[in-house]
Image (cartoon, rainbow, N blue to C red; front, side, top):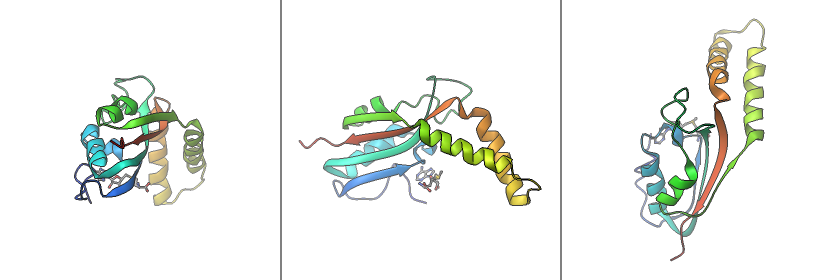
Length: 140
Ligand SMILES: C[S@@+](CC[C@H](N)C(=O)[O-])C[C@H]1O[C@@H](n2cnc3c(N)ncnc32)[C@H](O)[C@@H]1O
């Protein structure tokens, strides 16, 4: 597995970076965003899907994301034209997936495992919001 914070890519070598549901695992989110900024050309774009706590610092939320607030963090990493939007529709689709998994009768071992995960996830999902964050590297 590569490291989000140390991609090995050359500086200013890519036009776009997409991080789908992985940023939450990085011990330093800022280090990841700084690495993205480094590898992007001026005017390049970073797009992230992730989760954020509904209430900043909520101790019931995983320590990996309980303090995550992507807009200021993207700005701190040097990004401009930053936006973070909540995607309630993605959240509802995901929730439906977990609910349908739980409704499967006579589950085989794989489905038992998925149902265990569904219970764990649903117990805390309302404490988090699904977000899409975007930032652009300044042109000069
Ligand atoms: C929920 S999966 C999402 C995978 C993929 N982006 C997708 O949408 O199917 C999270 C991924 O993040 C990776 N990951 C976790 N920590 C990472 C890190 N520090 N650097 C790079 N990848 C990491 C995991 O190996 C896993 O593949």
